[in-house]
Length: 277
Ligand SMILES: O=C(O)C(=O)C[C@H](O)C(=O)CO
Ligand SMILES: [Zn+2]
Image 1 (cartoon, rainbow, N blue to C red):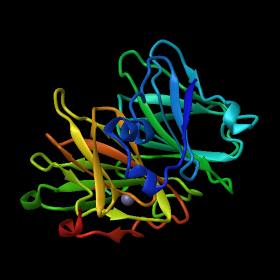
Image 2: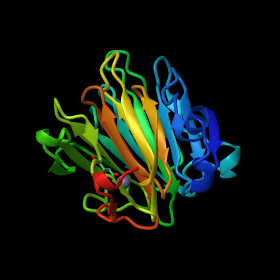
Image 3: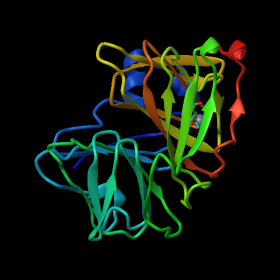
Image 4: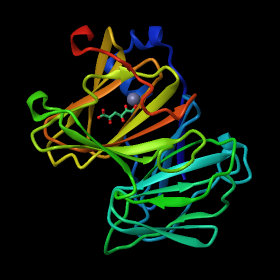
């Protein structure tokens, strides 16, 4: 298990950051390391952001020092989305199969979580985990079961499909909410107009960015924005005071994941594009 942590940054400190300080504090560059589980423990609502890339051996989700827990999910829940080919995860001996872009929610108290390799299909698992106050059932969510919304328009280069996978209209969770947003061909802007939600932090994980293309992710207080250039399979942390929006040099998909005060997806403080600075 590869693990690091990130402290929470005050917006007044963020304003002074150089490009490399911004990247060190908010960008997560290496989500997928071959035959490893790699994760970052953030001090934003204690959300853990990570990936599992089993290639030649099964990978077990293990506890580590910072958790001071007997096992990883002793006090936590986890949401997992497969961004590779079909794969299997076993949870306390029960096998769950996930197709591409399908999700698995695992409730608090599950002891033995194993990501299995498949050399033919090459599954790749992205996950978010947060502290949990209750035990909710472990289950998969398929694309058909997602709460799906069409939003934006080609005229404003932001036509996209939002697939809410692990949200309270689909299944109960304590804190974690996760889903996918897929940009239509010709559209490049996600989350534009942007928003903040001071009650929840968020992390974005970009994937399906074509070779030699990139996404410019915008963050910061609405009147004090900065940008971070992102590559395929990288994640970025969005503090509760920050907008989170991106524009790609092509279309792409990303996973959004949140933890915090409420489970209300629509709790957003919108910002008009003309108000941004
Ligand atoms: O494209 C979008 O708009 C989004 O995907 C928005 C995210 O879901 C989000 O930021 C939820 O708070
Ligand atoms: Zn948001």
